[in-house]
Amino acid sequence: MYQRPARSLCSALSILCCAPCTTTTSSSSSLLLLRSPVPVKRALSQPALLGSSSSASPRCGCCHQGASAGQCSAAVGPGVASSRAACSMGNSTSRLYSTLAKTLNSSAASQHREYLEQSDSEQLDPIDPKDLLQECQAVLQKRPPRLQRDFVDLRADSTSSQHPIRVMQWNILAQALGEGKDNFVRCPMEALKWEERKCLILEEILAYQPDILCLQEVDHYFDTFQPLLSRLGYQCTFFPKPWSPCLDVEHNNGPDGCALFFLKDRFTLINSVNIRLTAMKLKTNQVAIAQTLRCTETEKLFCIAVTHLKARTGWERFRSAQGCDLLQNLKNITQGAEIPLIICGDFNAEPTEEVYKEFSNSSLNLNSAYKLLSADGQSEPPYTTWKIRPSGECRHTLDYIWYSQHALNVNSALGLLTEEQIGPNRLPSFNYPSDHLSLVCDFSFNQDPDRLL
Image 1 (tube, rainbow, N blue to C red):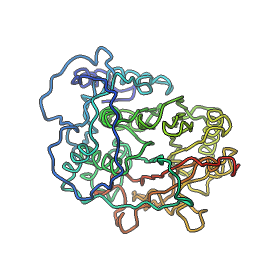
Image 2: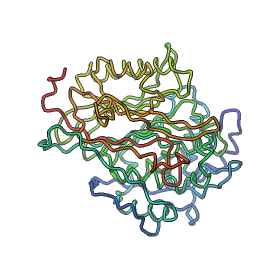
Image 3: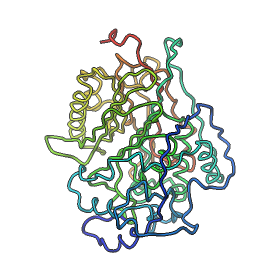
Image 4: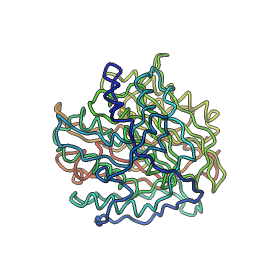
């Protein structure tokens, strides 16, 4: 259990010190994620890849010895109590003493070294995405079917032979915040149970099978997303907020942060930068990850970035300053737009805000991909998040996928859920695991990248 420094370290260590060891193996085999449609109807199978805390497992003292996340990673936690007063945030056996010590002692995000680095030797055996999907569907049998969404073809020219690059952007809702802070008054606590909600998240990812996955509010990186997605062929990077609000929630699963995943058989990592965003020359609690990748098929370089800006009304100038800092960092990384760029994020900003205008008018020549779904190609969707809190109904457009419009084409974009699909109680729900909708786009490299400069 992660605690603020004022709380007891000893009580947390008693939980952390005996994590089950997982034998690691290195494998060079790659996993091809198929683009076939995922059935909405859920099938029954015996969970194995997701794990179970109820089954007996040997315990050891490896966490005392600073074992890595890859060496001690249980994929799933025990049942989550359906009570706001006493809710369990996950499986404590997957957490590390070294991680806790860093969290308690951190004054800057750069100190979270075990969050930022991952060795290939820590990978587990590959798994078939269909097997994982079946397990998720078995867990979700009593839930309503997954909500169906369709891709909208945006290609002006369908003759390209390139294999598109599918990018998925999603604020998945941190478990600690969903159960402990966000107060979704029309969402039953039963709908937020982690052992089922995580399967809804995984099912959504498996349904669209992105080549690159950008997530925000990830607080179950080590016990769920890193061990599972790495076995699906993704290279994984996580950068936590220096002082995550998740740490204020009792029985939390550690700090939330941004996570970036890309398929290793499609891309090679050239450079990775973790950015702690500044505002008015002061370091803030918000972060970003920017990675330069080489596409195996085309040999072309591009940069992918993920971020999550400051939330709440009244912080507009703060977000604007964070956006300026991120843009300056990305200008340096892309050598002034010489390298094509894709930026995914929850900007916590409507299109009317200054930070949106900064990205629209940047010298990086960026466009927002989801504007292309509108009739005139100039309007953002009416919403990317829709929830009900004690203060009332919140329906906003906050999430974006920005791209270098001179170098990249948007082949297609995933349509949003309709109001009818979302339902009167809004999000999250038994049907959908987050208060934010996932955004998914297929990109290809422009054959004549100079024509729009």
